[in-house]
Length: 183
Length: 183
DNA sequence: CGGTTTCGCTACGACTAGTATCGATACTGA
DNA sequence: TCAGTATCGATACTAGTCGTAGCGAAACCG
Image 1 (cartoon, rainbow over the protein chains, first blue to last red):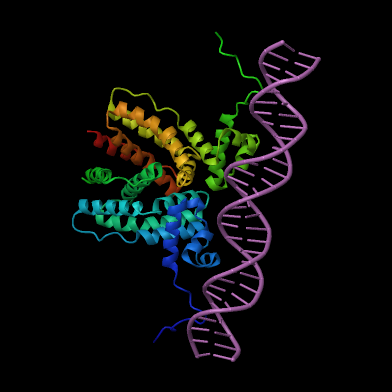
Image 2 (cartoon, each protein chain N blue to C red):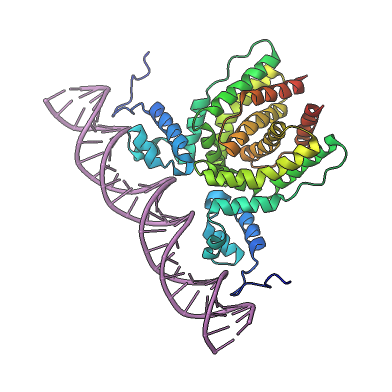
């Protein structure tokens, strides 16, 4: 039987994608602090109150935005070293996208002293990759978390210090270093 | 000859150390965002205006605080691998100190879209270590910057995600990984 | 058309970075 | 002792920010 086609009332307009896009472009142009919720809403063409009806805080919005922007890892193959390389390149490409690194830094800043936000960050953003990588790389969870720290931390630190994404040759050096760790 | 004993006027009170300590403890207790300049000044027992007479912005104050808190690297010995290990442990100890990681994340966030602050960050905080390590490790500057990204980035990412400093066994794994890279 | 839910809009309270001002204070040199 | 100078503390202020409240309008159902 049809499970109650649709609840009554005005349907929730599907603007999540536009809000995520507006969030990243605004953060990219102005930085996390000056990317106010007002401006993000204006860039998305909706009202600020609509944003607060869907996400409880600016930090939660940006975290959801990051989860959406990263998306799933490329599927694992047969070769652990190639899977690792693909995962690192995946992370490097994402973090090089405009606004991502700034969003990351801002959420980290907000997450300190806001345990709920850190919980969201760890659960929604890190855990999925931890699970997939634990299986595809055949490592302990502790080891996988260490790898994630190295990959994401290194890429973000480069972006934070220079404002530019890590050059390809350094990404390859990062891959080689971690592959050696795999043997 | 004595180079003009002292300029006229009321001497600048020496409260930098107290301000730095108050900055870190306040950030540790409240996080970067809620560690307002008002609260930092109150914790240091001085007026907010005195802070703004010495540092042009909150970001600059916190950056100066980080420079002061990190201090110089332990002197280099004869063994590159031991020097590297000492440098990593040095960074791990500093980043584990209360408030340091939160201060770092906050400055990164502020530095995006504030090129002057990023300049200060790169010049005053990173460059001294880059210079010393380039000599003691005998690597290219590009390679040293890569090492710094890996060490500081990894340690900060762990703090940002978990709120806890990296455990000793993982720090040792980080050292071993980079030492292998040295050969 | 009546019922229900979301939307846009405006206004608002609490808080923050950074600036301006002014009298009080601490030191120098005579 | 007394001017001269530069810093300090305190207060007030501007501009901006997060997040919430309230209201009428809009979009969907039966």
